[in-house]
Length: 195
Ligand SMILES: [Mn+2]
Image (cartoon, rainbow, N blue to C red):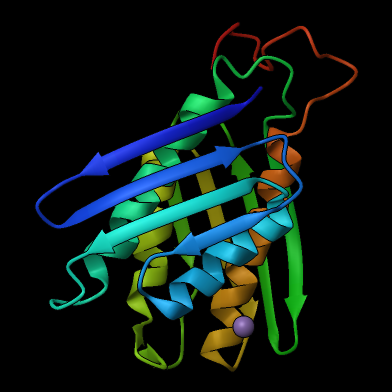
């Protein structure tokens, strides 16, 4: 089974992450940051990757370490669960609308981390959540997950909608990329022979 379990402990956060790439989008995410939990739930639900996340972070400082370190741990879990990437589709994309927000994602599970991020949130905060942490999460996730990740907001007015559309769009693209390709289930999807 394509599952992984990661435990990660630093002076700033203690994290445990469990994922199942062949899941049905069952989630149980508790990081102490309400809006972030809401986003992680979207990531699971729309990728169909089962996800359990626990984080005990230094929220008395701010939410930064919690959000960034969960991104690191989820990236590490993805790498572990994918193994040698045999039989996957590898690429995924999604153009996702959510009310005023329109977000496009294109990604490649290439093993080569690269984030192209064109997504501006018009406010500094969503509730108590720092908007700049949305990018921080995807920077950490793409770096540690070995993902080439392009995310562009083509339209949007409301920060909550734009951020949520980004998580859903990446989720939907992830669903496609990690899926088994029934036409080539025995091979690693690269002419190099490895990813
Ligand atoms: Mn929402």
